Amino acid sequence: MGAVPGLSVTMATALLVSLTYTWSAADALAMAMGVYVVGVYSGAVSAILVNIPGAPSNVVTAADGYKLTQRGEARKALIYTAFYSFTGSAFGLAALALLARPASALALRFQPADYFLLAVLGLVTAGGLSQSGSLAKGLTCSFAGLFFSLIGIDPVMGTPRLTFGIKALNAGIQTVPALIGLFGLAEVFMLIYKGAASSEPPAGRQEAEGERIDIGDMLRHFPNSLVYSLTGVLVGALPGAGSPVASFIAYGQAARLNRKPSRPFGEGAVEGVIASETANNACIGGAMIPMLTLGIPGDAVTAVMAAVFTVHGIQPGPLFLASNAELFGKIIEAGFISCVFLLLLGLFLAPRMTGVLRISGRYLVPAVALICAAGAYASSGRLFDVGVMVFFGLLGFFLRLGGFPLSPLILGLVLGGMADSNFRRAVSLASTADNFLAAMFGRPITLVLLALIVISLVVGGKRNAGRTEV
Amino acid sequence: MNGAGGTVNKAVSAAALAAAAALFARSVFGLLSAEDAVHMAMSPWLFPAVISVAGVSASAVLTVRAFRTPGRDGEKAAQDDRIRVFLTAALCVLYIVWLKTTSFIPASIVFLGMLMLVLGEKRMKVVIPAAVIVTLALYALFALLLKVRLP
Image (cartoon, rainbow over all chains, first blue to last red; front, side, top):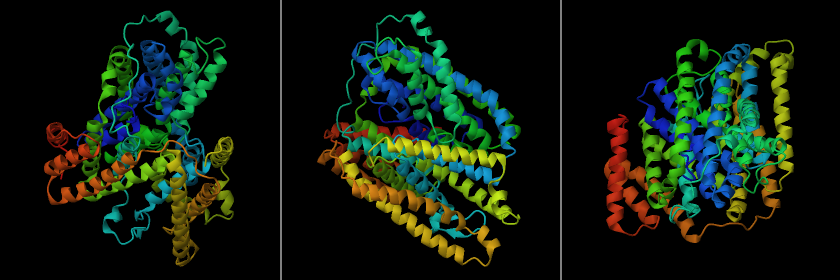
């Protein structure tokens, strides 16, 4: 699905969550990992072949990848992308396997104020580093997500909050229908708005088969790919940053590491494609670290995966590894198996799959709309949630029209409950201390988190200052 | 799209500012209703009060910029496509009503068929079989294979 222009990996994961209600947690998470790993790679296929990035993290890939297609080197671009997406994904998963336990041990020292600040860090980072390039837009979307998370019965006091007398809202805004609306139905509206749903699919050049691939040349980039992988893991582990940021940073690194690229960057440099795809795939393992050990999603897809955990009654956090060691092992196993499938699909199927990109929007878009409705209903068995999905679909459509990022909104929705309860616990605990501020913010972990929040705001503000768009 | 973005920007920014301001007012009212400081610390309106301040700040900056900066003329959707978006949204709402009054299979066949017509597929000999096949395929996938409840 990720290879079809406009259908992102986040959307695919959100839609497929609804299929897993009756599955075991291990099977559901294995499927989500498979979609995540292969979906991130798949977004590069449409970026390379038809210059339409499957996801924001593939925007950089399109810059050089499509130029390679125009030069008749699509097969080379696709195969290099498959190999280095595999490398990045495997590196990220290895980092997850190695670092999750130390991170869990550290997370056990976290107190309510720290969890609250972690949520704030995630929201500020997601808002500041979003593709919109506007800190104010990102923060407004974070606020919107938090606002929607407040709706329903207050979990601490048990009283209705912001339900406006509508009984169906007492249960709150369910994450899955909202996700399906924001990433599924909104995409449907966007495709229709852009005319892609009522016209024939874009055509790319078809020389995806028949070129010779120089294995030695492909492997020559391996040492640099380790640098891009490390960047991907580090950026992914920062709550809220996500793979688009990693791919941009890695592209900049590639420009510094390759003094003599095969072609100038932006003109078909395979080094740029490698950097972007290695880093965005390495982000997968990195983004899973805060999600599994702290319950803080690293990006939009892991926010969707957090919903998979919730649906199956599992709480990610510091005790997740101790109480679900077997499940953690299966997640890692599923990730590595997905990497192998990614490689096989990328090497043997992707060069032949230009036909998939030619499904007419007239049939694809209605089918996706129907899947959205069925998925939203399946989440709770309430027609009300289909209405919620349509509302968020329209909201997502208008936000995207206005250039607002959706990731901060979804992170706000997912993190809102956790931020709320931890904030109130922290205030309650600190209110009994002699020095309120010292009790609330005086611990070393808290100070580090505060410093990171300030840095995120400054970096986000600087990016904002660099752009004139509102 | 930027052309529309100019107008949409203003509308979304102003709506966010209004929502944040309303939330702030409601939160302050809720906090002032608390009996004492201890109840205030655990009040359901404490967190909304904090985030509404942040929401008002961010959306106020955005609103001021949106109204001070002229909207750009960029890629704008064709009139037909804007009408299609409107009709699709209306069909989604109607689909919920149909689901409530009938069941998944008939409602979905009608929804899919009408959506294909809206998207420009005029050949009924394609629309009808496609709507029926896609509906039955999804029903088989969700209800029969995955045992997921459908209306």
